[in-house]
Image (cartoon, rainbow, N blue to C red; front, side):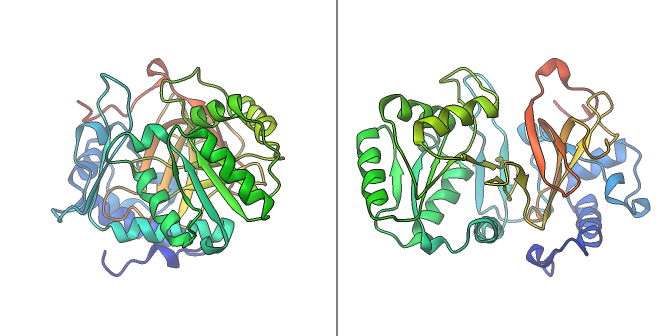
Length: 324
């Protein structure tokens, strides 16, 4: 779909664009095509978004999810834990990823050059193939700010930089993995007036998992801020949603969340009901744009959504076709 531009997607044309991407991927993405065939779904008879089959995200651990046979520009790998297989996302055109995260950032936060961007992402920096590091590194570069940069375990330097930026009333974003932000506030207490603190989720086996409300309360106290922001993205996607001062996750126009029944993976639930999160990511046009995640959540009437937790293995029902 060389002529397809996901940045042209609006609420008014989302259905039309999503169905066009679905039919393209149903024909050209072999794994998705096989999955659809096994479900006995005929793509030319799918006329509503709600009837599109969503590929279980586990397929990215065992199959190459790609349309056609293109040259692969980047391979992004999930973090995983010791002994677990990693998901891999084969990206044929990395410029689509760049366009997606830069435009989404602009939509939710404005011009990147207005910010200093600080990143506390040790678990990601210490491995290869992280899509998050790729994104944050590019955002740091696009900020064109000499104060922007990565921090590993040098918490004192990060604290000193935050204090320096606060004294200058500089607009700052601190992006950090949850456990590293908690480690930081165990050593330092802040009172940040000009800094957005954004957690990217995940304890990565370093700490006990926490529900978001509990995590955010701890971080708000430690950083002295009214709200904590959050980024919802994953290796298998090319787009992100943001949890900002609205205290709900919001998607860019080319991304949409639907909720499926946890007992029947092929059935969707109405607005306000909790279930499994299905993601439509139209930026992911060369792979699969219709992914059934292992996250639990609910969608609100305005299209915003909340993430409530994750399935454990015993909770996963149905849609095991082709998974090896």
